[in-house]
Image (cartoon, rainbow, N blue to C red; front, top):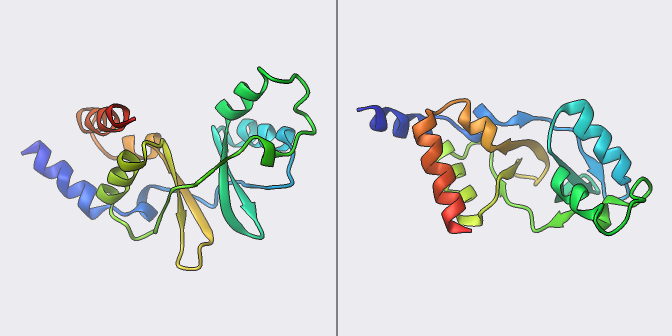
Length: 149
């Protein structure tokens, strides 16, 4: 019974229902310091990177931490040298079930939400999904993603 209710929740809720709307972003010309200040000020671990207003990459706090292994001077380093390209996107009206399937299929922890014009409207991470489903269901989603990677 609970599992069916959660399945309904995953099918009924949309990406727009759970996303963090209008996330702070950087351009490909922003510096690592600018991105780190967004991590701090927005209390987040990922920043979408835009080029001419369109999302082209995502930079995570982990990317910055790993870059520190190669150099201590990241302050003026452009995010374009640190960011991960090959973003995964969903549409605002995609069901949460579809979002979970996309996370699993791409073995990623976050997806960017874009509209029909490919303009960034939000970001969804595991924590956004965890807020609306049970720990048991979240465990299944995470297990499927981790085992797929």
